[in-house]
Amino acid sequence: MQSSNVPYQQEFESVRTRYIKLAVLVVLAGNIYPLIYLRQNFEESILESFSLTTTQLLQCYSMLGVLYMVTYLPSGWLADRVSPRKLMSFALAFAGGLGVWFSTYPSFSAVMIIFAGWGIAAGLTFWAAMIKATTLLAKPSEQGRFFGILDGGRGLVEAILASIVLAMFAHYTQGLGQDTPDALRKVIWVYTGLMLFLAPVAYFVLSDPDEPVAPEALSDQSVTSHQHDAVEGESLWSQIKEVASHEEIWLCGICILTGYQLFWATYSFSAYMQNHYGLTAVAVGTITVAKLWMRPIGAISAGFAGDFLDRERVLSGLLLLASIALASMVYLPAGSSTAALLGIVLIVGFLTYAVRGIFWSTLESCDISNKVKGLAIGIISLVGYSPDIYLPLLNGYLLEQYPGKQGYSIYFLGISMMGVLGALAAWRLKVMVSRKAIS
Image (tube, rainbow, N blue to C red; front, side):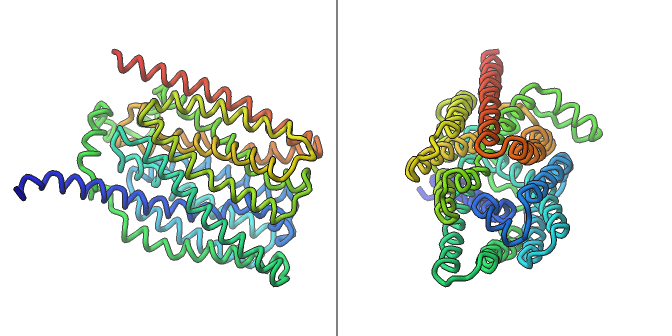
């Protein structure tokens, strides 16, 4: 009787182990990006503390985006050859060390160097390693939920941390009467300390690729990838051409490009509400932090919906709805109440996070071997995350050329139109997948 339970126990251990590894990835991902994108909740406070202009801050993010673009392909190549735990551990330690320097409020040129270092840490050594580790943990039938849990879970981590640091910031500024720079420095210390703590956790808890935690998951994936094992002996350029020859790769990239643009637009909500609706920094911070709580709800629900319904169909619908919701921000009257602003921001947040939670699961539909999956991730990222380069510059240009609400209106509506294009790309991918299934 005991021996008959062995397969069940092994399966249980495998599932439990995979979800533990996923939980670790969630915590790691939820801690490396909040400091880099601190402007989402504290843009005006950053400008005051560092004595920067809006244009200078956007230049930092544009330069960060350039570095991401330059490192995406090398990041994918690296993820195929170096253990994800080593790459992510290094990224957290390096980004945390730069955070210590950032907390001293150095000059603009030094801030540019810090952002360059963050670009290397998050772009070259962290990103592709995290995506590949996740896709190898999940079975083909679990891709949606694993990526939904990854994005939603890291969003939950970010929301919890953001709620804590916002309460701390409000306590120091409003309760104790400290000035903004002193309170913001304590926020930076919290994020920095967590990254430095998690660096060794990543190294010792995660496993190497040659220590698979779910053999059945890897074997399932190898069956669906048509066994392109021969690419291992090919040159890097040959591998790039092989991956780039798949139309599905480009459709996946367009889905991520347009979905990421929709998400990027939400970074402007903080300054938009503070400047054009008369909200205080704390009120704006409260609304944007509330938006962060939509991430676990939207991403995880979209991930499971994609697995049980149809990944591409769900993604297409979400992209369309998110585009409509973002466009509605333009037509919200200037005298709108805080409750109305909160409501529309939460809807936009839910939909954009739902898109983010499911768009990477379309990688499973691209029929790519595990041996070059990191490279595929790099190519898709090169296309999908290009907004990191041009959107900050476009945002700054529009606000300078069309001051006030008009600049934001053009910005939001343009991104909404691109979201519709993404919905069409997701539908095209669905049609291709359906045809292959029939044949």
